[in-house]
Length: 296
Image (cartoon, rainbow, N blue to C red):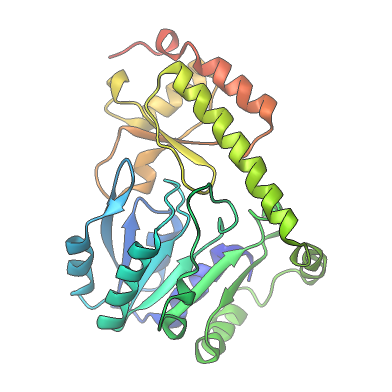
């Protein structure tokens, strides 16, 4: 597919019909709600509660009781960095089986997970291969985001339908880039160990800097995003805060409200997939943020 973006869209159009319902955890990567709407489906949002971004089991089962056609699972999560535990995944799997629901997974950060957390492929859970559409991408693992190479893994009967949807969406991803990417697929375990080590160092560097500044923030279990709590500054709009942050501090951030269905305006997202010198410069600029952005 042309990146995991098309993979998710193709998966959604493969298993849903107009009028079907789809469960989406909130916060969520922005495309999920749009994918559901473009497919004619209705999203059912289930909140994940900070700071650990856990779900309420009763709320999740209430969503399943509406008989959705599918659930979308981003693991590790963009934007909050949550890595779902085995027990959480097993709970979701039991509900998916009980209510006969497909699970569409977005696992593009599968190799960027910080100890002691562990990524579990949802399709490996008992009985889940038959109802899981696993979507992923080469973009994050091999740092080739512009190549737009993704894929879907699912049982043959699902793949046959997905291939037809894919054909009408994009026909195919660039063939020369597919050939080139095979080099990465042949890397040994040491590559993935090194990748995890590098991102762990960047996470620890950035988290320590934020701790030194004294800004409340999340600690990601996976992926490479940190969410800052800007409550102390008294802004009603996180979008306005991000504008002021860029203008007066020189640091770019994404308003957290763009990821939440709920009225959350006190979080902004930063990411640390940058050179160390860039991270140090960002931390230097943030060091006197309280002088540059007075409390309202």
